[in-house]
Length: 285
Picture 1 (cartoon, rainbow, N blue to C red):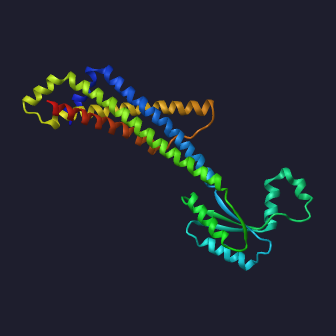
Picture 2 (cartoon, one colour):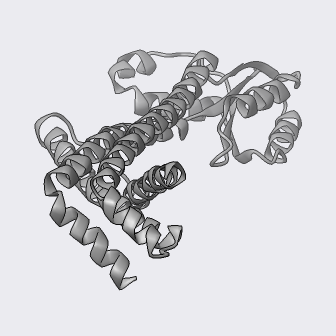
């Protein structure tokens, strides 16, 4: 292992400019991915906040009896996706409206008859707030005769989850694309290093060195290049995050696990690209 690390570091010393350029290109590729990760995380957090407000509200007929209301509440509460069910009377609805809409206080003060209907509000469990679940609960509520109308903002819910899916797919596609670019860059750099040391490699093969012995220094070299690129990408992403938060608007930093995964991806890409480049060369000779 000591020999492998020594040879990898010696390769950096022999061609520092190539190493810097390779790490810089990998860092830039991962930096773009880091920017999309920050954007995706903040979009996910914003959508998560909106998702918490997704609920189903069943408005009741004026002649709904207490027994019928209790039956509706019990049936909805039994559904596994439902976290809580709350009955809101007409008077409670009016009190809420006065508190939440103070600009209409004069209008509410002059009311002789309460125009707001009673309702049943259904809160969903975390992780179960999706369009299919909301639609199923709405259909269940509509099956009761005392329910006059069910609202949950169908178009708004559909758009919310569509945006979430688009964000996930876009991040996956871009991540794969930039990972491929980074792997190609590292692979090209390793092939240049192999070409520069081709005579040394041939001598090693003549004296009986195994392919694994020849391959290991290049694998470590690729891994270190990927590590340097990952650290550079982390630094650039952190600077961009600070600038946006300071000059434009506050945004959240990505989770630590994402940071670790990004750096580990750089190391893995470097190792994989090096392995493929060395394997191809050894096959040719």
